[in-house]
Image (cartoon, rainbow, N blue to C red; front, side, top):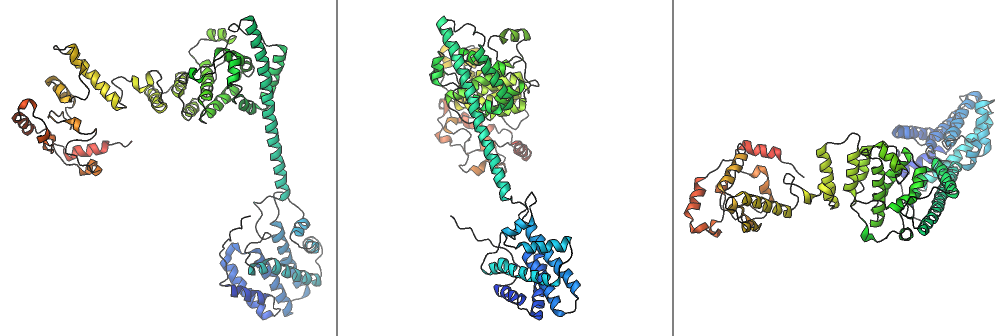
Length: 576
């Protein structure tokens, strides 16, 4: 066993020598020394405040009685009253602090602290009956002082600063109460174990009956047709399951989402004629196989209630957030999608009634907590999350704004790397933001093809320009004018200089320092593009004429960035 760490406490005495001297004076039997010790105890109580140890307070009260008794100035009745008050306070403070939530006899508590029963009886007589004689009061005072010296003062000298009897037990439970709670907890766990076992047994009996029905349909070669009505044995099992669900619904739901029930094993799939290969699983848009859905349809029909549907949907999302295997994630997502589809508002009541007898697990629409449902879906990311989120968003009673829905679906597609419908980043149109460098190149190639397709001198081979070709070669005068018109009124303008941008990484401009601090707005200065230090010697002269380039650079000074423009840019910066 590990040794307990030594606890440190703030005390009222200056040193160990002061403690030993005070203890010696208290038990010296001389009134002068005992009076001096009482004065020191009064100083200690002033330092302790409300945290004065009960043993110190009781010792001071009893010693004061003995000092007053030794003076001979008080009569017997007065001394009996003083002793009675001191002894009563000692018993009440020491013993009643050991009381738990339920009151117990003081004699039993005194026995645990080695306090004799006659002390408790003496206190009882002082409180409720005739006052005892002065002889019994002096005898009780002497015993209590010796008990305090042995149980508290001597232990302090030995280094034990905390005693079990003096610690407050208001927050501690009695041994009997703890044992009672332990028994209750053990009984509760036993009931849970038995409840889960009963739930599994009922579901196993249900599966056995359904497999027998499937084998009979297989012999008749009518597996794909309607399943027969429940037999008497199956009806009895369903009645037992319904009764168990009304008593322990959570246990039944926990058993249903385990492997071997709503999540089939490979043997169960083979027994139902379903290929268990994971290569055939559609992780992006899962659905429950038709045979497997009909297998569980009688159970869903019996347990059809809004509360059950809501609870099992929450449980399925919770299981999906535990990073299950592909097989388990597929069937969990498939059951979630089946529940959401059955709850869809897109189908009319006539279609619902028509499907009710075939394979619809419930008919009446359930009012879900849609915000919590969206949160649960987003907290359980998987390949099917965009598909499930789309079902939720399209069925909400108070739908979110269309832009918010598109952003949610797009973010889910990016996070899960799925390719679900129009929410995939690969299917974004030109109005959507660019996510990757490949998307930027594809958009540039499409824009180039569109420009050449509308130009009068277009040839089929001209649209095959590589995406790494300089963009300046394709900027015609009309294009420059269009872009300048778009940028009119802003501090930006189109750069027409022959700068080899392919030599500079994305996000870096010619003449930019390698120091990241140069990107801060405070370090920027008003400068035109023509004033930047571009290594013109390394730029090959276009068409062998450098004079035109230099004339163009020196003659197009472009608008300068004022401090007001820089302040606007700084205010509009956003950190991701």
